[in-house]
Image (cartoon, rainbow, N blue to C red; front, side, top):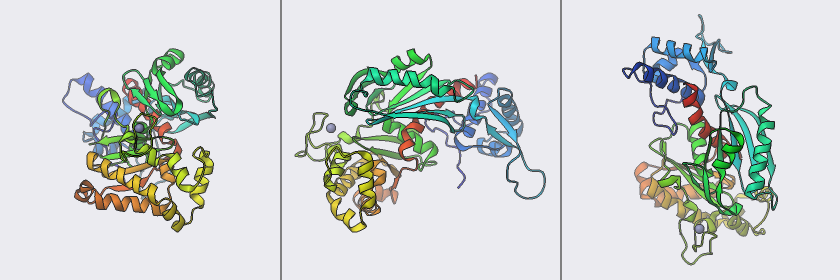
Length: 402
Ligand SMILES: [Zn+2]
């Protein structure tokens, strides 16, 4: 299925316009074409003309501008279709705009250089051990690794996107709390932008998972999406009407702290019976009879080895809590698609099928939508890293077109 452009996509430049002031229109058109090529890949000028709804001469001028800036090139397609002269493809030049993506997790850090078009041009990462997750140590290591990684590409990164599993002030990347890292009041954005001398954007990990799945994953083309990241904690990212919902300050998304069981376990946030206490990794470990601090790899292996009937039995209660929370989420946010990420994407089929069935049956909104789908992440463990790259690109693409 060919993707249609999605005006209003998070970070989108919107459709091409004609009739605005000439300089603004040129800049806007360049941004729209560049974003289309960055997100959906190479295509012909004819496709750009059709998708962006402007005349051929405008697209010709825009492509010529972008070619002159080195951001795109035109070349023959590798595979020819049909007889006659093939149309040239407009191809984004990966090394012409590069960003640094950083994904900070509870157990590891991943960094990548991402080129225009979304290609990962280089990556590195390391595991976190007790002590190395302290903010000063961790951010110093990011500052040390960044220039080493940057030697892998000719062009230096033009911006940085960072994913943090916590409550992040979007304006300046200040992390109020990242409880599973035991971080409080960490100025991640300020620290990294001072050290790297680059614009740095920081966002919550689930928000970036949603952005990644919406831009490059299983939620492409879907306008109303909830991405639910479940690992040691649980968070949600929401795309509504094609745009990321952020709430005041950018703090929207703590779905894991929706109280579902008032007589349940005490949560680290101070409440009792949060959804996270029933559907994050420790709850999964308890359901499988494993120690609550079982390593991720071992937990994944245990999930893979479960026979279908054993999975349904052992995870019966876990499945019930996951479904109950999702029914609430779907009723409140009305997504057409719920994407399960991280450990939740590793749940066996019988569990996923039962959760999806319960959402269909119990959510009024899902019934009205006939129905909300529940699917696994397509990007797996890289979702937040890819989202961090897209966060940086949203700004870099705007400045790339001058
Ligand atoms: Zn809580």
